[in-house]
Length: 301
Image (cartoon, rainbow, N blue to C red; front, top):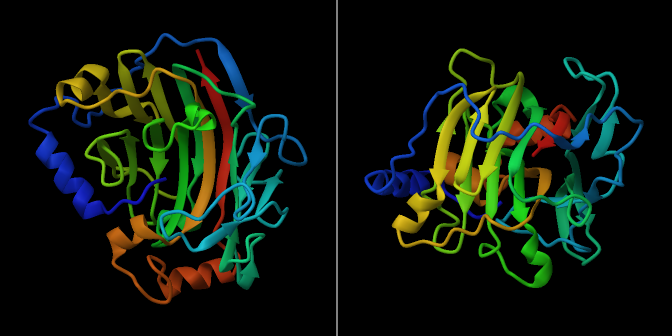
């Protein structure tokens, strides 16, 4: 999840529109013939399946980015299975931030919030396919500054290929406003990337259960919400713009729940009491009422 500001990203996207034909569309279709399930987790056990998922820890195997205000911790307070989650099929993974003023991470930095982040790095990585997650946004989808995400990252980062050259695919990001965004980040288009689109939950509840999906082929990547295509970008369009397509190598999946930071602040303009995080949202976190729920994650090829 890179540094972004909504205004700059929107301006860049408008400037790029003349060069790209893949604007957001609402088309109920599938852009890959993927039909063999190669990964599935419905979080039906009593705890996170660590044969499938790694837990990232700030100050240990992860550093703070984007001026985010939380430390990621490995704790049953912040990462757990809710077997009675309303609307979930067999339980749900809960990423649950907590207000913990003065928490000290292993590297000695202090934070006022802790939260959860998991990934499939080295446990499940894939090239091409259809990957989807059914999730429920926190606090009804309208708590400004909360930043849950569902995305994938190029596995070449293991081999020393730095971000963004390894390629990032944001299937879903949400910053507490009545929309979600999808995006690509590569060598010449990252941070305030113009390769992005929003969807605004027309006729549906932002705080309800929704399926966010990416269909990834050698020709391009399409993004869907509840089987409605909201955006497609092709390899040819990227290359026609003189940019580098970095999505022909394995990726791993990430689910995380950040609080505040550069992207939310670029949208809401909040500076106090925390960058991108207003007091009203801090109060919800302090009351333990903001959770990001994931019903299932699936990959088909």
